[in-house]
Length: 372
Image (tube, rainbow, N blue to C red; front, side, top):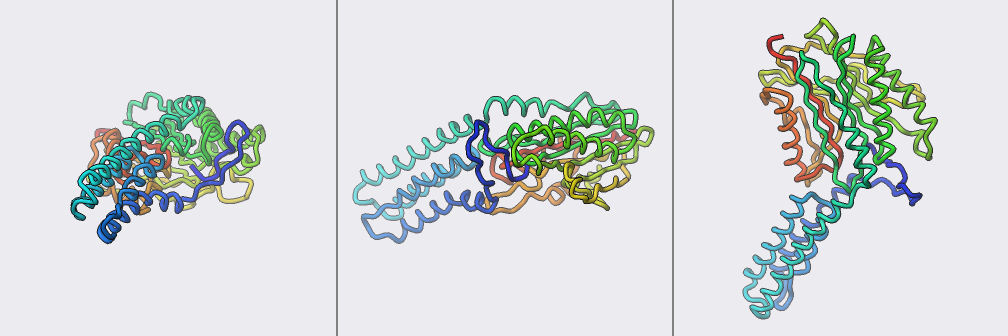
């Protein structure tokens, strides 16, 4: 989910990536309009009205925000107008005051309808179908592990991203991947499918995680050679490869290729961030001659949970631009299983952002049973 989406289909002009700072600034406009309306209503001379400030806030929020944020903006604008009318006493007339309140309420309802229209028309059908196929990649988990996954799409206007995950029981042990393809739309989904297909084959055949990563590199390189468009030479995929070796239930190996570090949550509420000792560059960047990294080995205690996620989680921002911090939010929590952990995390990210995420979220959790 990097900036630099592929050109729009149909030969349209390519839009420049939208700056996160600009997105945050625009997202605060409805709040500023409501504050401005309150200030104007308190300071303006008789005969002036603050209704235009309040009426403008919900339509601005509708295409930019989640349904929850749009609804809260509509309520704040309506009650702000009511409070202003009460504070100022009767406007030029009681009828005029009622008209102003009804105007703001009507515009607020229209903004909610606008939100539904914008969200309904966000994704082309082909992208939706490809995204559905992209997410249907979690097989029956190995008997000795509990596995859960979640995929939550971004706001429709953001486009479908290339988040991916898979778990596979192999002759070498249980292997998994969580990744994030640069860009959005069908090219990103196609690259995600390439990575997943190569992982399915390489995870069974290769003896080490480094060899699996090399196979993924070659698959991306072949796709790049067949691809079209000026940005295909810059494609890359951050990825986290992990392995629970056969016959070694308490061992966990992790190879990090430019991806957010996973978390290891202990049954007693303890938490460790598995930062790589030697981080590698994302897949698809070997041509620059950088590090490919090496696996780190750590103890995987019985009952512990391994949590892997894409940067749609760690980069999720609230209204004030503060990023979500998974280690700080989850430390001290006790989760009986991977499904509970992922449901809790998705709900917490939703509360943090105030609704739908601005970027795709892919989550994968694996638990080693207590009795093993």
